[in-house]
Amino acid sequence: MENFIAHFNALESQSTAEIARLEELRRSNAMKQEVIANMKRELARYNELDQRQNEKRENFECQRKVTMENVTANLSRAKTLSTELESLDLDCANQLLNRDEVRTKLDGLRTQMARIGETEKRLRSDVYDLKQPPGAVAADLITEMRTKQAVIRKEISDRMASFDLTAIVAEVQAIESQRKQRLELSKELAAKSEILSNLDADNEALASHLQELQTEFSTLQEEKEKVTKQNEDNARRLNDMELEKEELIKTSESLACELEEIRSQATIQKQKQAEIDEKISSAKRALEEMKAEVLCKEEALRRLKEQRESREAQMAIELENMTNDFQQQFDILSKQRDTYVKACEDARAEIEKWKSYERFIVMYEERCRKVAEAQEKLSKLKEHHRNLLRKVEEKKKKDQQANTEKLDADIMEEERKVDDLQNKIFDIDGEICLLKYQVPVIVISMDADIYLYRKVRRKSPLRQEIGPRIQHQENKSLTKGKDNVAVGRIIKEPTRKAVNGTEQQLNRFSMEEKKSDSRIARKEKELKNQRVASLRKEKHGLQQHSSEEANNRIECIEKKNEMNKAVKEKDSNTAFKLERDITVNLDDSVVLEDDGGDLLGRAENVAHNKSSELRTSTANTTLETDVAQRL
Image (cartoon, rainbow, N blue to C red):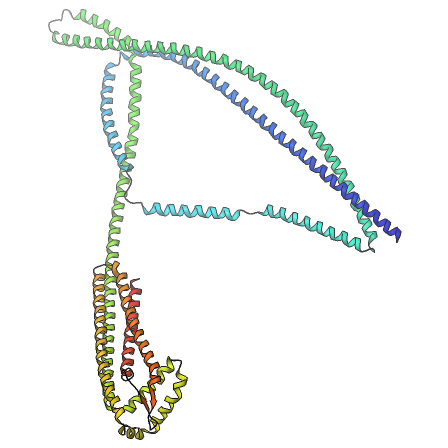
Protein backbone atom coordinates (compact mmCIF):
# COMPACT_ATOMS: atom_id res chain seq x y z
CA MET A 1 0.00 0.00 0.00
CA GLU A 2 2.83 2.39 0.87
CA ASN A 3 4.48 1.61 -2.47
CA PHE A 4 1.20 2.32 -4.20
CA ILE A 5 0.83 5.67 -2.44
CA ALA A 6 4.40 6.58 -3.26
CA HIS A 7 3.86 5.58 -6.86
CA PHE A 8 0.65 7.60 -6.95
CA ASN A 9 2.42 10.65 -5.48
CA ALA A 10 5.17 10.28 -8.05
CA LEU A 11 2.60 10.18 -10.80
CA GLU A 12 0.91 13.29 -9.40
CA SER A 13 4.22 15.16 -9.21
CA GLN A 14 5.01 14.07 -12.76
CA SER A 15 1.60 15.23 -13.96
CA THR A 16 2.04 18.62 -12.24
CA ALA A 17 5.49 18.96 -13.81
CA GLU A 18 4.03 18.15 -17.21
CA ILE A 19 1.23 20.67 -16.69
CA ALA A 20 3.80 23.34 -15.75
CA ARG A 21 5.84 22.42 -18.83
CA LEU A 22 2.70 22.71 -20.97
CA GLU A 23 1.98 26.16 -19.54
CA GLU A 24 5.57 27.21 -20.34
CA LEU A 25 5.15 25.88 -23.85
CA ARG A 26 1.89 27.80 -24.22
CA ARG A 27 3.55 31.00 -23.03
CA SER A 28 6.45 30.46 -25.40
CA ASN A 29 4.01 29.75 -28.23
CA ALA A 30 2.10 32.95 -27.42
CA MET A 31 5.38 34.91 -27.49
CA LYS A 32 6.30 33.30 -30.80
CA GLN A 33 2.89 34.11 -32.21
CA GLU A 34 3.31 37.74 -31.14
CA VAL A 35 6.75 37.84 -32.80
CA ILE A 36 5.27 36.31 -35.96
CA ALA A 37 2.43 38.87 -35.93
CA ASN A 38 4.96 41.71 -35.57
CA MET A 39 6.98 40.30 -38.45
CA LYS A 40 3.84 40.04 -40.57
CA ARG A 41 2.97 43.66 -39.81
CA GLU A 42 6.50 44.76 -40.75
CA LEU A 43 6.34 42.73 -43.95
CA ALA A 44 3.00 44.31 -44.79
CA ARG A 45 4.47 47.76 -44.15
CA TYR A 46 7.49 47.01 -46.36
CA ASN A 47 5.19 45.67 -49.06
CA GLU A 48 3.15 48.88 -48.91
CA LEU A 49 6.34 50.95 -49.19
CA ASP A 50 7.44 48.85 -52.15
CA GLN A 51 4.04 49.31 -53.82
CA ARG A 52 4.17 53.06 -53.27
CA GLN A 53 7.66 53.25 -54.76
CA ASN A 54 6.55 51.17 -57.73
CA GLU A 55 3.56 53.46 -58.22
CA LYS A 56 5.79 56.54 -58.05
CA ARG A 57 8.19 54.95 -60.55
CA GLU A 58 5.33 54.11 -62.89
CA ASN A 59 3.89 57.62 -62.59
CA PHE A 60 7.29 59.11 -63.35
CA GLU A 61 7.70 56.88 -66.39
CA CYS A 62 4.22 57.81 -67.57
CA GLN A 63 5.05 61.50 -67.20
CA ARG A 64 8.29 61.01 -69.11
CA LYS A 65 6.45 59.18 -71.87
CA VAL A 66 3.83 61.92 -72.01
CA THR A 67 6.49 64.63 -72.30
CA MET A 68 8.31 62.71 -75.02
CA GLU A 69 5.05 62.22 -76.87
CA ASN A 70 4.30 65.93 -76.54
CA VAL A 71 7.76 66.80 -77.90
CA THR A 72 7.39 64.44 -80.84
CA ALA A 73 3.88 65.77 -81.45
CA ASN A 74 5.19 69.34 -81.44
CA LEU A 75 7.97 68.42 -83.90
CA SER A 76 5.54 66.64 -86.19
CA ARG A 77 3.18 69.59 -85.91
CA ALA A 78 5.98 72.00 -86.88
CA LYS A 79 6.75 69.86 -89.91
CA THR A 80 3.09 69.72 -90.88
CA LEU A 81 2.82 73.47 -90.45
CA SER A 82 5.76 74.01 -92.78
CA THR A 83 4.17 71.71 -95.35
CA GLU A 84 0.84 73.48 -94.85
CA LEU A 85 2.54 76.83 -95.53
CA GLU A 86 3.85 75.49 -98.79
CA SER A 87 0.42 74.10 -99.68
CA LEU A 88 -1.13 77.45 -98.76
CA ASP A 89 1.15 79.20 -101.18
CA LEU A 90 0.04 76.82 -103.89
CA ASP A 91 -3.61 77.19 -102.89
CA CYS A 92 -3.36 80.97 -103.06
CA ALA A 93 -2.18 80.64 -106.62
CA ASN A 94 -4.98 78.19 -107.44
CA GLN A 95 -7.77 80.21 -105.83
CA LEU A 96 -7.35 83.06 -108.27
CA LEU A 97 -8.51 80.79 -111.09
CA ASN A 98 -11.84 79.64 -109.58
CA ARG A 99 -13.40 82.92 -108.47
CA ASP A 100 -16.68 82.52 -110.40
CA GLU A 101 -17.33 79.04 -109.03
CA VAL A 102 -16.42 80.20 -105.54
CA ARG A 103 -18.86 83.11 -105.78
CA THR A 104 -21.75 80.91 -106.84
CA LYS A 105 -20.94 78.41 -104.11
CA LEU A 106 -20.68 81.19 -101.56
CA ASP A 107 -24.12 82.48 -102.54
CA GLY A 108 -25.54 78.99 -102.17
CA LEU A 109 -23.85 78.67 -98.79
CA ARG A 110 -25.35 81.99 -97.65
CA THR A 111 -28.84 80.85 -98.59
CA GLN A 112 -28.28 77.52 -96.85
CA MET A 113 -26.98 79.37 -93.78
CA ALA A 114 -30.12 81.50 -93.68
CA ARG A 115 -32.35 78.42 -93.95
CA ILE A 116 -30.33 76.62 -91.27
CA GLY A 117 -30.65 79.63 -88.96
CA GLU A 118 -34.43 79.54 -89.35
CA THR A 119 -34.54 75.80 -88.69
CA GLU A 120 -32.27 76.29 -85.67
CA LYS A 121 -34.67 78.86 -84.21
CA ARG A 122 -37.60 76.52 -84.73
CA LEU A 123 -35.65 73.65 -83.17
CA ARG A 124 -34.75 75.76 -80.14
CA SER A 125 -38.36 76.79 -79.62
CA ASP A 126 -39.53 73.18 -79.94
CA VAL A 127 -36.80 71.96 -77.56
CA TYR A 128 -37.86 74.60 -75.04
CA ASP A 129 -41.46 73.40 -75.34
CA LEU A 130 -40.32 69.81 -74.87
CA LYS A 131 -38.31 70.75 -71.78
CA GLN A 132 -41.41 72.12 -70.10
CA PRO A 133 -42.72 69.64 -67.48
CA PRO A 134 -46.01 67.88 -68.38
CA GLY A 135 -49.23 68.53 -66.46
CA ALA A 136 -49.72 64.98 -65.29
CA VAL A 137 -47.45 61.98 -64.87
CA ALA A 138 -48.14 59.03 -67.13
CA ALA A 139 -49.46 55.86 -65.56
CA ASP A 140 -46.81 53.77 -67.35
CA LEU A 141 -44.02 55.66 -65.56
CA ILE A 142 -45.73 55.12 -62.19
CA THR A 143 -46.11 51.37 -62.83
CA GLU A 144 -42.52 51.15 -64.04
CA MET A 145 -41.27 52.91 -60.89
CA ARG A 146 -43.36 50.62 -58.72
CA THR A 147 -42.00 47.52 -60.47
CA LYS A 148 -38.45 48.84 -60.01
CA GLN A 149 -39.18 49.46 -56.33
CA ALA A 150 -40.52 45.91 -55.95
CA VAL A 151 -37.44 44.46 -57.70
CA ILE A 152 -35.09 46.48 -55.45
CA ARG A 153 -36.94 45.39 -52.34
CA LYS A 154 -36.80 41.77 -53.50
CA GLU A 155 -33.05 42.02 -54.08
CA ILE A 156 -32.56 43.52 -50.61
CA SER A 157 -34.65 40.77 -49.02
CA ASP A 158 -32.70 38.11 -50.98
CA ARG A 159 -29.43 39.57 -49.79
CA MET A 160 -30.69 39.68 -46.22
CA ALA A 161 -31.82 36.07 -46.51
CA SER A 162 -28.51 34.96 -48.03
CA PHE A 163 -26.56 36.49 -45.14
CA ASP A 164 -25.64 33.74 -42.64
CA LEU A 165 -23.28 33.18 -39.76
CA THR A 166 -22.21 29.62 -40.51
CA ALA A 167 -18.50 30.32 -40.01
CA ILE A 168 -19.05 32.04 -36.65
CA VAL A 169 -21.40 29.27 -35.55
CA ALA A 170 -18.79 26.67 -36.56
CA GLU A 171 -16.11 28.47 -34.54
CA VAL A 172 -18.42 28.73 -31.54
CA GLN A 173 -19.24 25.04 -31.84
CA ALA A 174 -15.53 24.19 -32.03
CA ILE A 175 -14.85 26.28 -28.90
CA GLU A 176 -17.79 24.63 -27.15
CA SER A 177 -16.51 21.16 -28.14
CA GLN A 178 -13.06 22.04 -26.80
CA ARG A 179 -14.61 23.19 -23.55
CA LYS A 180 -16.63 19.99 -23.30
CA GLN A 181 -13.49 17.96 -24.02
CA ARG A 182 -11.67 19.78 -21.24
CA LEU A 183 -14.53 19.10 -18.85
CA GLU A 184 -14.54 15.43 -19.82
CA LEU A 185 -10.77 15.23 -19.29
CA SER A 186 -11.09 16.80 -15.84
CA LYS A 187 -13.87 14.34 -15.00
CA GLU A 188 -11.72 11.45 -16.18
CA LEU A 189 -8.80 12.63 -14.03
CA ALA A 190 -11.07 12.85 -10.99
CA ALA A 191 -12.43 9.37 -11.71
CA LYS A 192 -8.93 8.00 -12.10
CA SER A 193 -7.84 9.54 -8.79
CA GLU A 194 -10.82 8.00 -7.00
CA ILE A 195 -10.74 4.52 -8.58
CA LEU A 196 -7.57 2.60 -7.59
CA SER A 197 -8.29 -0.45 -9.69
CA ASN A 198 -7.64 1.38 -13.01
CA LEU A 199 -4.15 2.72 -12.13
CA ASP A 200 -2.42 0.65 -14.78
CA ALA A 201 -4.66 2.02 -17.49
CA ASP A 202 -4.08 5.51 -16.14
CA ASN A 203 -0.31 4.99 -16.24
CA GLU A 204 -0.51 3.86 -19.86
CA ALA A 205 -2.68 6.87 -20.71
CA LEU A 206 -0.18 9.18 -19.01
CA ALA A 207 2.68 7.57 -20.90
CA SER A 208 0.86 8.03 -24.19
CA HIS A 209 0.06 11.59 -23.21
CA LEU A 210 3.77 12.19 -22.46
CA GLN A 211 4.68 10.84 -25.86
CA GLU A 212 2.18 13.15 -27.48
CA LEU A 213 3.59 16.07 -25.53
CA GLN A 214 7.09 15.14 -26.62
CA THR A 215 5.97 14.99 -30.23
CA GLU A 216 4.25 18.36 -29.86
CA PHE A 217 7.42 19.76 -28.29
CA SER A 218 9.48 18.45 -31.18
CA THR A 219 7.01 19.98 -33.65
CA LEU A 220 7.20 23.28 -31.79
CA GLN A 221 10.99 23.15 -31.97
CA GLU A 222 10.78 22.57 -35.71
CA GLU A 223 8.35 25.46 -36.05
CA LYS A 224 10.74 27.60 -34.02
CA GLU A 225 13.57 26.76 -36.39
CA LYS A 226 11.34 27.58 -39.36
CA VAL A 227 10.42 30.91 -37.79
CA THR A 228 14.09 31.74 -37.21
CA LYS A 229 14.85 30.88 -40.84
CA GLN A 230 11.99 33.06 -41.98
CA ASN A 231 13.29 35.91 -39.84
CA GLU A 232 16.71 35.54 -41.45
CA ASP A 233 15.14 35.52 -44.90
CA ASN A 234 13.12 38.60 -44.01
CA ALA A 235 16.29 40.35 -42.79
CA ARG A 236 18.03 39.52 -46.07
CA ARG A 237 15.03 40.77 -48.01
CA LEU A 238 15.06 43.98 -45.97
CA ASN A 239 18.71 44.53 -46.84
CA ASP A 240 17.98 43.88 -50.51
CA MET A 241 15.04 46.26 -50.38
CA GLU A 242 17.23 48.96 -48.81
CA LEU A 243 19.78 48.50 -51.60
CA GLU A 244 17.00 48.68 -54.18
CA LYS A 245 15.71 51.79 -52.45
CA GLU A 246 19.12 53.45 -52.79
CA GLU A 247 19.25 52.46 -56.47
CA LEU A 248 15.75 53.84 -56.96
CA ILE A 249 16.80 57.11 -55.33
CA LYS A 250 19.73 57.32 -57.73
CA THR A 251 17.54 56.52 -60.72
CA SER A 252 15.01 59.11 -59.56
CA GLU A 253 17.78 61.72 -59.39
CA SER A 254 18.91 60.79 -62.90
CA LEU A 255 15.32 60.92 -64.11
CA ALA A 256 14.93 64.35 -62.49
CA CYS A 257 17.94 65.54 -64.48
CA GLU A 258 16.46 64.08 -67.65
CA LEU A 259 13.17 65.76 -66.81
CA GLU A 260 14.91 69.12 -66.52
CA GLU A 261 16.56 68.55 -69.89
CA ILE A 262 13.21 67.59 -71.38
CA ARG A 263 11.66 70.71 -69.91
CA SER A 264 14.40 72.86 -71.43
CA GLN A 265 13.80 71.15 -74.78
CA ALA A 266 10.08 71.76 -74.35
CA THR A 267 10.72 75.48 -73.78
CA ILE A 268 12.87 75.55 -76.93
CA GLN A 269 10.12 73.80 -78.84
CA LYS A 270 7.60 76.30 -77.50
CA GLN A 271 9.79 79.15 -78.73
CA LYS A 272 10.05 77.50 -82.15
CA GLN A 273 6.30 76.96 -82.17
CA ALA A 274 5.78 80.64 -81.35
CA GLU A 275 8.05 81.59 -84.26
CA ILE A 276 6.11 79.24 -86.54
CA ASP A 277 2.86 80.82 -85.36
CA GLU A 278 4.23 84.25 -86.18
CA LYS A 279 5.19 83.02 -89.65
CA ILE A 280 1.71 81.57 -90.12
CA SER A 281 0.12 84.87 -89.07
CA SER A 282 2.36 86.78 -91.48
CA ALA A 283 1.45 84.32 -94.24
CA LYS A 284 -2.22 84.84 -93.44
CA ARG A 285 -1.78 88.58 -93.68
CA ALA A 286 -0.02 88.17 -97.03
CA LEU A 287 -2.86 85.98 -98.24
CA GLU A 288 -5.38 88.59 -97.20
CA GLU A 289 -3.43 91.24 -99.10
CA MET A 290 -3.34 88.96 -102.12
CA LYS A 291 -7.07 88.45 -101.85
CA ALA A 292 -7.58 92.22 -101.79
CA GLU A 293 -5.39 92.59 -104.87
CA VAL A 294 -7.34 89.84 -106.62
CA LEU A 295 -10.59 91.60 -105.85
CA CYS A 296 -9.20 94.86 -107.20
CA LYS A 297 -8.05 93.10 -110.33
CA GLU A 298 -11.44 91.47 -110.73
CA GLU A 299 -13.06 94.87 -110.48
CA ALA A 300 -10.67 96.25 -113.09
CA LEU A 301 -11.39 93.29 -115.34
CA ARG A 302 -15.10 93.88 -115.05
CA ARG A 303 -14.64 97.50 -116.00
CA LEU A 304 -12.48 96.52 -118.93
CA LYS A 305 -15.12 94.09 -120.12
CA GLU A 306 -17.75 96.79 -119.97
CA GLN A 307 -15.56 99.18 -121.89
CA ARG A 308 -14.81 96.45 -124.44
CA GLU A 309 -18.47 95.72 -124.99
CA SER A 310 -19.32 99.41 -125.38
CA ARG A 311 -16.47 100.11 -127.76
CA GLU A 312 -16.43 96.85 -129.67
CA ALA A 313 -17.59 98.38 -132.92
CA GLN A 314 -15.29 101.36 -132.67
CA MET A 315 -12.18 99.58 -131.37
CA ALA A 316 -11.80 96.96 -134.10
CA ILE A 317 -8.38 98.29 -134.97
CA GLU A 318 -7.16 98.19 -131.37
CA LEU A 319 -8.57 94.68 -130.84
CA GLU A 320 -5.30 92.88 -131.36
CA ASN A 321 -3.49 95.07 -128.84
CA MET A 322 -6.22 94.61 -126.31
CA THR A 323 -6.29 90.86 -126.90
CA ASN A 324 -2.56 90.74 -126.28
CA ASP A 325 -2.98 92.68 -123.06
CA PHE A 326 -5.86 90.48 -122.08
CA GLN A 327 -3.79 87.37 -122.81
CA GLN A 328 -1.04 88.62 -120.56
CA GLN A 329 -3.47 89.35 -117.77
CA PHE A 330 -5.06 85.95 -118.31
CA ASP A 331 -1.68 84.28 -117.91
CA ILE A 332 -1.13 86.12 -114.66
CA LEU A 333 -4.57 85.11 -113.41
CA SER A 334 -4.04 81.48 -114.46
CA LYS A 335 -0.95 81.42 -112.31
CA GLN A 336 -2.94 82.76 -109.39
CA ARG A 337 -5.83 80.28 -109.97
CA ASP A 338 -4.24 77.61 -107.78
CA THR A 339 -4.76 79.78 -104.72
CA TYR A 340 -8.52 79.23 -105.00
CA VAL A 341 -8.31 75.43 -104.63
CA LYS A 342 -8.06 75.55 -100.86
CA ALA A 343 -11.06 77.89 -100.68
CA CYS A 344 -13.04 75.49 -102.86
CA GLU A 345 -12.19 72.55 -100.63
CA ASP A 346 -13.20 74.52 -97.54
CA ALA A 347 -16.45 75.44 -99.23
CA ARG A 348 -17.10 71.78 -100.08
CA ALA A 349 -16.43 70.83 -96.44
CA GLU A 350 -18.86 73.49 -95.26
CA ILE A 351 -21.44 72.22 -97.74
CA GLU A 352 -21.04 68.65 -96.45
CA LYS A 353 -21.31 69.95 -92.90
CA TRP A 354 -24.56 71.76 -93.62
CA LYS A 355 -25.88 68.72 -95.45
CA SER A 356 -25.31 66.68 -92.27
CA TYR A 357 -27.80 68.96 -90.48
CA GLU A 358 -30.59 67.45 -92.56
CA ARG A 359 -30.41 64.38 -90.32
CA PHE A 360 -31.23 66.57 -87.30
CA ILE A 361 -34.22 68.03 -89.19
CA VAL A 362 -35.53 64.50 -89.78
CA MET A 363 -35.03 63.68 -86.09
CA TYR A 364 -36.82 66.88 -85.15
CA GLU A 365 -39.79 66.01 -87.37
CA GLU A 366 -39.92 62.51 -85.87
CA ARG A 367 -39.90 63.96 -82.36
CA CYS A 368 -42.61 66.45 -83.29
CA ARG A 369 -44.74 63.57 -84.56
CA LYS A 370 -44.17 61.63 -81.30
CA VAL A 371 -45.04 64.71 -79.25
CA ALA A 372 -48.26 65.16 -81.23
CA GLU A 373 -49.17 61.50 -80.64
CA ALA A 374 -48.41 61.84 -76.94
CA GLN A 375 -50.58 64.98 -76.74
CA GLU A 376 -53.44 63.15 -78.46
CA LYS A 377 -53.12 60.27 -75.99
CA LEU A 378 -53.00 62.75 -73.12
CA SER A 379 -56.16 64.48 -74.33
CA LYS A 380 -57.92 61.11 -74.62
CA LEU A 381 -56.83 60.17 -71.11
CA LYS A 382 -58.05 63.52 -69.78
CA GLU A 383 -61.42 63.02 -71.45
CA HIS A 384 -61.66 59.50 -69.99
CA HIS A 385 -60.71 60.91 -66.58
CA ARG A 386 -63.45 63.56 -66.84
CA ASN A 387 -66.01 60.90 -67.79
CA LEU A 388 -64.98 58.76 -64.83
CA LEU A 389 -65.24 61.74 -62.47
CA ARG A 390 -68.70 62.56 -63.84
CA LYS A 391 -69.80 58.94 -63.38
CA VAL A 392 -68.43 58.89 -59.82
CA GLU A 393 -70.27 62.12 -58.98
CA GLU A 394 -73.51 60.74 -60.44
CA LYS A 395 -73.08 57.53 -58.48
CA LYS A 396 -72.45 59.50 -55.29
CA LYS A 397 -75.58 61.57 -55.91
CA LYS A 398 -77.63 58.42 -56.51
CA ASP A 399 -76.24 56.81 -53.35
CA GLN A 400 -76.99 59.96 -51.35
CA GLN A 401 -80.53 60.09 -52.73
CA ALA A 402 -81.05 56.40 -51.92
CA ASN A 403 -79.69 56.93 -48.40
CA THR A 404 -81.92 59.96 -47.86
CA GLU A 405 -84.97 58.07 -49.14
CA LYS A 406 -84.12 55.16 -46.89
CA LEU A 407 -83.68 57.50 -43.92
CA ASP A 408 -87.01 59.18 -44.73
CA ALA A 409 -88.72 55.79 -44.85
CA ASP A 410 -87.10 54.76 -41.55
CA ILE A 411 -88.12 58.04 -39.91
CA MET A 412 -91.70 57.71 -41.16
CA GLU A 413 -91.81 54.11 -39.92
CA GLU A 414 -90.47 55.12 -36.51
CA GLU A 415 -92.94 58.02 -36.30
CA ARG A 416 -95.77 55.68 -37.21
CA LYS A 417 -94.64 53.28 -34.49
CA VAL A 418 -94.43 56.14 -31.98
CA ASP A 419 -97.95 57.29 -32.92
CA ASP A 420 -99.26 53.73 -32.53
CA LEU A 421 -97.58 53.45 -29.14
CA GLN A 422 -99.06 56.79 -28.05
CA ASN A 423 -102.53 55.66 -29.14
CA LYS A 424 -102.08 52.41 -27.25
CA ILE A 425 -100.94 54.34 -24.17
CA PHE A 426 -103.93 56.64 -24.32
CA ASP A 427 -106.28 53.62 -24.73
CA ILE A 428 -104.66 51.89 -21.76
CA ASP A 429 -104.93 55.09 -19.71
CA GLY A 430 -108.66 55.38 -20.49
CA GLU A 431 -109.28 51.75 -19.60
CA ILE A 432 -107.38 52.16 -16.35
CA CYS A 433 -109.38 55.26 -15.40
CA LEU A 434 -112.65 53.39 -16.09
CA LEU A 435 -111.51 50.43 -14.04
CA LYS A 436 -110.55 52.72 -11.16
CA TYR A 437 -114.06 54.18 -10.95
CA GLN A 438 -115.84 50.82 -11.46
CA VAL A 439 -113.91 48.41 -9.25
CA PRO A 440 -114.31 48.71 -5.45
CA VAL A 441 -111.62 50.20 -3.32
CA ILE A 442 -110.63 46.91 -1.72
CA VAL A 443 -110.08 45.29 -5.14
CA ILE A 444 -107.99 48.34 -6.16
CA SER A 445 -105.99 47.99 -2.95
CA MET A 446 -105.53 44.27 -3.60
CA ASP A 447 -104.39 44.98 -7.20
CA ALA A 448 -102.05 47.62 -5.87
CA ASP A 449 -100.70 45.14 -3.30
CA ILE A 450 -100.20 42.53 -6.00
CA TYR A 451 -98.39 45.06 -8.21
CA LEU A 452 -96.36 46.15 -5.21
CA TYR A 453 -95.45 42.54 -4.55
CA ARG A 454 -94.34 42.07 -8.15
CA LYS A 455 -92.50 45.38 -8.22
CA VAL A 456 -90.74 44.68 -4.96
CA ARG A 457 -90.00 41.16 -6.08
CA ARG A 458 -88.19 42.60 -9.10
CA LYS A 459 -86.39 45.54 -7.49
CA SER A 460 -86.73 45.81 -3.69
CA PRO A 461 -84.63 43.75 -1.24
CA LEU A 462 -87.69 43.65 1.15
CA ARG A 463 -89.69 41.20 -0.98
CA GLN A 464 -89.21 38.37 1.50
CA GLU A 465 -91.01 40.35 4.24
CA ILE A 466 -94.00 41.56 2.13
CA GLY A 467 -94.25 38.48 -0.10
CA PRO A 468 -96.13 36.04 2.19
CA ARG A 469 -98.70 38.68 3.16
CA ILE A 470 -99.50 39.63 -0.45
CA GLN A 471 -99.52 35.97 -1.55
CA HIS A 472 -102.02 35.24 1.17
CA GLN A 473 -104.11 38.19 -0.02
CA GLU A 474 -104.02 36.89 -3.63
CA ASN A 475 -105.25 33.49 -2.51
CA LYS A 476 -108.03 35.19 -0.58
CA SER A 477 -109.02 37.24 -3.61
CA LEU A 478 -109.29 34.10 -5.71
CA THR A 479 -111.35 32.05 -3.19
CA LYS A 480 -113.52 34.78 -1.71
CA GLY A 481 -114.67 37.04 -4.52
CA LYS A 482 -118.16 37.33 -3.17
CA ASP A 483 -116.92 38.12 0.35
CA ASN A 484 -114.79 40.92 -1.08
CA VAL A 485 -117.86 42.48 -2.73
CA ALA A 486 -119.75 42.24 0.56
CA VAL A 487 -116.90 43.72 2.49
CA GLY A 488 -116.77 46.56 -0.04
CA ARG A 489 -120.37 47.37 0.85
CA ILE A 490 -119.56 47.45 4.59
CA ILE A 491 -116.86 50.14 4.24
CA LYS A 492 -117.01 52.76 6.92
CA GLU A 493 -116.34 56.44 6.99
CA PRO A 494 -112.53 56.24 6.81
CA THR A 495 -112.60 54.07 3.68
CA ARG A 496 -115.02 56.45 1.94
CA LYS A 497 -112.73 59.33 2.75
CA ALA A 498 -109.89 57.29 1.33
CA VAL A 499 -111.90 56.71 -1.87
CA ASN A 500 -112.60 60.41 -2.21
CA GLY A 501 -108.92 61.11 -1.64
CA THR A 502 -107.99 58.52 -4.25
CA GLU A 503 -110.34 60.10 -6.78
CA GLN A 504 -108.67 63.44 -6.20
CA GLN A 505 -105.29 61.80 -6.52
CA LEU A 506 -106.37 60.11 -9.75
CA ASN A 507 -107.48 63.44 -11.18
CA ARG A 508 -104.24 65.04 -10.10
CA PHE A 509 -102.19 62.17 -11.54
CA SER A 510 -104.10 62.31 -14.82
CA MET A 511 -103.30 66.04 -15.04
CA GLU A 512 -99.63 65.40 -14.32
CA GLU A 513 -99.63 62.58 -16.85
CA LYS A 514 -101.16 64.83 -19.47
CA LYS A 515 -98.51 67.45 -18.73
CA SER A 516 -95.72 64.87 -19.00
CA ASP A 517 -97.27 63.51 -22.22
CA SER A 518 -97.41 67.03 -23.63
CA ARG A 519 -93.75 67.58 -22.71
CA ILE A 520 -92.77 64.28 -24.31
CA ALA A 521 -94.81 65.10 -27.42
CA ARG A 522 -93.12 68.50 -27.61
CA LYS A 523 -89.67 66.90 -27.36
CA GLU A 524 -90.59 64.29 -29.95
CA LYS A 525 -91.75 67.08 -32.25
CA GLU A 526 -88.41 68.84 -31.73
CA LEU A 527 -86.59 65.59 -32.52
CA LYS A 528 -88.71 65.17 -35.62
CA ASN A 529 -87.90 68.71 -36.76
CA GLN A 530 -84.20 68.09 -36.12
CA ARG A 531 -84.32 64.90 -38.18
CA VAL A 532 -86.08 66.63 -41.05
CA ALA A 533 -83.52 69.47 -40.93
CA SER A 534 -80.65 66.97 -40.92
CA LEU A 535 -82.14 65.15 -43.91
CA ARG A 536 -82.49 68.42 -45.81
CA LYS A 537 -78.90 69.26 -45.04
CA GLU A 538 -77.81 65.84 -46.23
CA LYS A 539 -79.77 66.30 -49.45
CA HIS A 540 -77.96 69.61 -50.06
CA GLY A 541 -74.56 67.95 -49.38
CA LEU A 542 -73.92 69.45 -45.95
CA GLN A 543 -72.60 66.34 -44.33
CA GLN A 544 -70.17 68.11 -42.02
CA HIS A 545 -72.94 68.90 -39.51
CA SER A 546 -74.10 65.29 -39.20
CA SER A 547 -71.88 64.63 -36.18
CA GLU A 548 -73.30 67.69 -34.34
CA GLU A 549 -76.88 66.57 -35.08
CA ALA A 550 -76.07 63.07 -33.88
CA ASN A 551 -74.66 64.58 -30.67
CA ASN A 552 -77.85 66.62 -30.21
CA ARG A 553 -79.95 63.52 -30.69
CA ILE A 554 -77.84 61.59 -28.22
CA GLU A 555 -78.18 64.43 -25.69
CA CYS A 556 -81.99 64.44 -26.10
CA ILE A 557 -82.13 60.68 -25.66
CA GLU A 558 -79.89 60.93 -22.59
CA LYS A 559 -82.23 63.56 -21.15
CA LYS A 560 -85.20 61.24 -21.75
CA ASN A 561 -83.34 58.38 -20.11
CA GLU A 562 -82.55 60.59 -17.11
CA MET A 563 -86.25 61.54 -16.82
CA ASN A 564 -87.24 57.87 -17.00
CA LYS A 565 -84.67 57.03 -14.34
CA ALA A 566 -86.06 59.78 -12.12
CA VAL A 567 -89.60 58.41 -12.59
CA LYS A 568 -88.39 54.90 -11.79
CA GLU A 569 -86.58 56.12 -8.67
CA LYS A 570 -89.80 57.91 -7.64
CA ASP A 571 -91.73 54.66 -8.14
CA SER A 572 -89.20 52.71 -6.09
CA ASN A 573 -89.36 55.32 -3.31
CA THR A 574 -93.16 55.10 -3.24
CA ALA A 575 -92.89 51.30 -3.18
CA PHE A 576 -90.69 51.49 -0.11
CA LYS A 577 -93.12 53.94 1.49
CA LEU A 578 -96.09 51.65 0.79
CA GLU A 579 -94.67 49.00 3.08
CA ARG A 580 -95.13 51.34 6.02
CA ASP A 581 -98.65 52.42 4.93
CA ILE A 582 -100.04 48.87 4.63
CA THR A 583 -102.48 48.11 7.50
CA VAL A 584 -105.08 45.43 8.20
CA ASN A 585 -108.79 46.19 8.50
CA LEU A 586 -111.17 44.59 11.05
CA ASP A 587 -112.27 41.91 8.55
CA ASP A 588 -108.62 40.93 7.73
CA SER A 589 -108.58 42.93 4.49
CA VAL A 590 -105.58 44.97 3.50
CA VAL A 591 -106.10 48.74 3.57
CA LEU A 592 -103.58 51.24 2.24
CA GLU A 593 -103.17 54.70 3.67
CA ASP A 594 -102.59 56.62 0.48
CA ASP A 595 -101.82 60.16 1.64
CA GLY A 596 -100.11 61.58 -1.41
CA GLY A 597 -101.94 59.55 -4.04
CA ASP A 598 -98.72 57.88 -5.21
CA LEU A 599 -99.95 54.30 -5.10
CA LEU A 600 -103.36 54.66 -6.77
CA GLY A 601 -102.93 55.19 -10.42
CA ARG A 602 -99.87 52.89 -10.37
CA ALA A 603 -101.06 51.22 -13.57
CA GLU A 604 -100.92 54.57 -15.38
CA ASN A 605 -97.37 55.11 -14.13
CA VAL A 606 -96.40 51.64 -15.25
CA ALA A 607 -97.96 52.09 -18.68
CA HIS A 608 -96.41 55.50 -19.03
CA ASN A 609 -92.98 54.16 -18.04
CA LYS A 610 -93.33 51.31 -20.48
CA SER A 611 -94.31 53.68 -23.27
CA SER A 612 -91.38 56.02 -22.49
CA GLU A 613 -88.98 53.07 -22.40
CA LEU A 614 -90.29 51.92 -25.78
CA ARG A 615 -89.85 55.43 -27.18
CA THR A 616 -86.27 55.74 -25.93
CA SER A 617 -85.38 52.28 -27.21
CA THR A 618 -86.80 53.05 -30.67
CA ALA A 619 -85.08 56.44 -30.75
CA ASN A 620 -81.77 54.81 -29.75
CA THR A 621 -82.10 52.17 -32.46
CA THR A 622 -82.91 54.76 -35.14
CA LEU A 623 -79.99 56.94 -34.04
CA GLU A 624 -77.59 53.98 -34.15
CA THR A 625 -78.77 53.00 -37.63
CA ASP A 626 -78.38 56.61 -38.89
CA VAL A 627 -74.86 56.91 -37.48
CA ALA A 628 -73.85 53.50 -38.89
CA GLN A 629 -75.13 54.40 -42.35
CA ARG A 630 -73.32 57.73 -42.34
CA LEU A 631 -70.08 56.18 -41.17
